[in-house]
Amino acid sequence: MALPVAFFGVFFAWPVVSIVDRGLRPDGAWRFGRIGETLSRPDILDVLGFTVWQALASTGLTLLVALPGAYVFARFDFPGKSVLRAVVTVPFVLPTVLVGTAFLALVGRGGLTDELWGLRLDTSVWAILLAHVFFNYAVVVRTVGGLWSQLDPRQEEAARVLGASRWTAWRTVTLPALVPAVAAAALMVFLFTFTSFGVVQILGGDAYSTLEAEIYRQTARLLDLPTAAVLTLVQFVAVGAILAVHARTVRRRETALRLVAPERTARRPRGAGQLALLAGVLVSVALLVLLPLGVLVERSFAGPDGYGLRYYRALGSLDESGTFLVPPLEAIGNSLRYAVAATALAVLIGGLAAAALTRRAGRLVRGFDALLMLPLGVSAVTVGFGFLITLDEPPLDLRASWILVPLAQALVGVPFVVRTMLPVLRAVDERLREAAAVLGASPWRAWREVDLPLVRRALLIAAGFAFAVSLGEFGATVFIARPDSPTLPVAVARLLGRPGELNYGQAMALSTILMVVCAVSLLLLERLRTDRTSGEF
Image 1 (cartoon, rainbow, N blue to C red):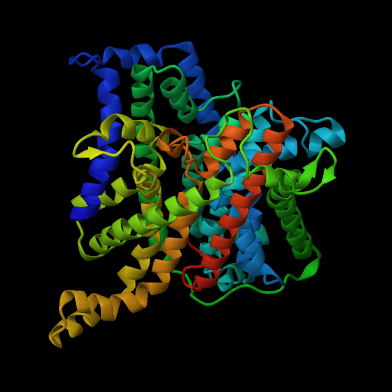
Image 2: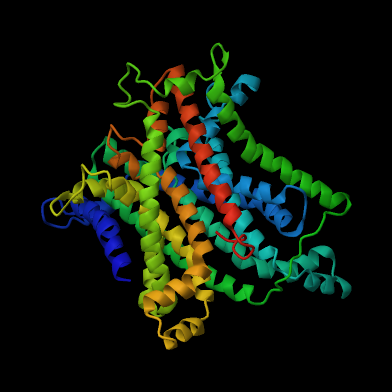
């Protein structure tokens, strides 16, 4: 645990604590009264209220749309199912900036709905809610569908034989078993939408602001550290409570999984009702997942003189606006280099953490497990700004170093590595390690000969997730990426922030490139995924 604890202490706890310290103790004396002053401001109360409201609305809407999809993927067998399962997972690993860009191309100014019907949703909250459904659809399908596919349908059939109606049998037999998984999925969606930044930044504009977006505004635009510190504390407490509830739900879910039948339950849909349900899910996937991505690609080729590669060619040269110090196309190479370095760090730190959590138990280790999840919920904006004010003096003066970006991205990748590797490591029979030790193997050789062959596939899957997540990280990178070394998400945000048809087209082209890179990473991951891990993140 030594290296992971040191890593999180230096590159997560220290920057966050420094931001709070500078905001609430500017002259050496704590000023806790600022907490009450900030939280009583009408504009801050509006931000907090909207943050909670949109997270609840997004969670409810996502469950409403995605639960039928979870049932279809769990119980039905149809041609192209594995490919479609990979497709619906693509939005989850896409950067939130790209998600916002896709919906901007669909429902924004000059978007598909604007051209066809004169309807624009980028000035309404509906664009934000739909983008959140698009982003989190796979969370519900994977989490709930993974459990649903393992429930023995004969239990429900037995209730029907005893006289229960189809609805009563489902409500009394299947639903109680699904409640932990549904609750876990709802909590995850709520967490992701509660801390939403990129989507709100692009689609919300100045009209709507979440807690995360407000922290960015207070730090980057207004330089109001006291207000940003208070909002960071509020978000930290809220996310901590959400993760505590989530951890309890996960433990309940694991208990339920030990009671289910392991055999496969998917079959061909039968009857008009099941065929209609399958058709409805396919239509919803086409409208919510495929259409935004398709419109994004179409806009990247559609120029004023027809379709062509004009915007792609423009990425290789500088414009006169001074938006970039280097051609935007260089952001591709920057992102790939940063993501490779961040993936190596995430696999190293996450792998050691997962090994420690496997071999030890107790409250300290459980607390460490919760700590590993905090970067997913604590403001990435705070972490990025904290990097600038903490890592600026020897022996850790990294402000001019390229490694600063991979360090921030690795913080987000580590939780995915831990969550992917931990179940597999826990499944390794300890007696195999003991037998290797008895035969004279050193601990290193025992790990290399026993553990590594068993967890190699999970390790590759974890690396794939870490790479995709690192590639799309935006909240912290927007602060610490140097002007001459922008990443793809930062470059897209810069282009969208400037007026003009050429900037908009280049943003669509860069977003398409980023989407292709993320999708290829995910499809490679899906090929490596085993049946055992295919239902889990």
